Length: 236
Length: 289
Image 1 (cartoon, chains in turn brown, yellow):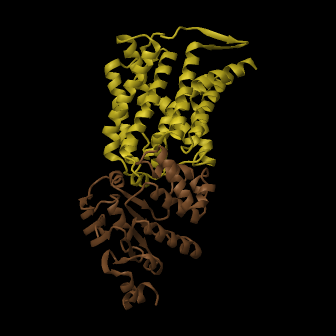
Image 2 (tube, chains in turn orange, brown; image 1 turned 120 degrees about the vertical axis):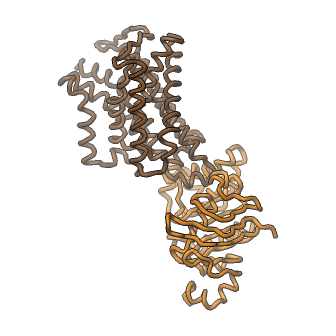
Image 3 (cartoon, one colour; image 1 turned 60 degrees about the vertical axis):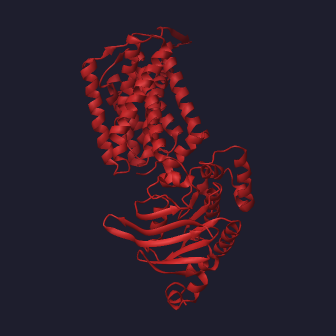
């Protein structure tokens, strides 16, 4: 199995405050991998470091090619798309314009129209709302748009930061089913989640962060079975 | 009533240039969260660019306009490199002070080169007046308004309907996310400064020809008034900034016509105080710092 993303010895600090310490993780092609942990464990900082949005030290490689220090917009051009925490849509742009921004690096043209159509098939609610401002959508619809905006760039790696945050349990359920369906079509996913139980249900493998350090890692089945993980993260 | 309509007409002609200068101010602030205090000097550079073009190159109006805009754009890119790029993303007062410094330096550079008195700009547009009933308007007034209108509509089209305009709006709202979708934020910033300088430069050419002079310190009051337009309108909607620019021109003309022209320059600041008391984010809403 080929390795899509490889992160080694990652260190992120904000001023004198370290947020991520010697974190290592990998995403093989075709898998869903999750980063779990409490608030402030360094999950989002890890992701922002991969995207080039915060300064970091260490090794970050995409398909063996170092991307550490590469500007964020170029990392995207290499096939990394991001579903940010709290959606972070362009709220003053319409649904359709948000999709156009998703495809910014790809250019428009006839291919774009068929991609938009695919997104509307995946998320039919968005079709009805295409002319509406993104800021006026419901939470669930916003999450769909955030995912569609990322998918329309035809990434090789999809990075999702807290996709379930602020969504009703029922919506979370169907969202995770959709994420699984997207992965089944071959897209590799790296997901940050506080909702460990849900994440472990669909992830193949997961990393556990505690105050910036890697505390445990393993297949989802192994982590589910681990007593420590049960106690701390799954409330068992 | 004739005086009223005549002053409204005069006000719209001048107000259109306030709007053009204010739009650049507002665009740069929205996209970069930088209050570019050197922006008024783009306006001044446009007027001197017109003067230089007339003196050394051509007296053809379109040539003069292009010359003025070009000089303003060059000054704009210099300001970006010297006072904005090194301090971008820092606390808002830092680029504010850096651009103020470069602005003051530009004024005094112009004073060194062109002297402390205004230089005369010959009338490259024939001094012809048109009358419509009791109203009269000069050709240069109409040209000024037409250029401003084209720039405003052009900017609106660019921001709303083009790929880079859309990216500009995306950067204004969420620079990090825009970058993560492949937008080179630094390029968008430079493009935005360039556009703002071209627009202010065109206004400088118009005002320079209309008032037949260019002066090292002409940007001060003019820029301040445009800044006021942005604050009063808020920087979220370009239509709001356009409307307030036009309105300010009309109010000033009415105060000059009915009260006294010495109060003219107080109008903008009076309106600003009243608006900020009741709507601190401006009439149409603002992006926060």
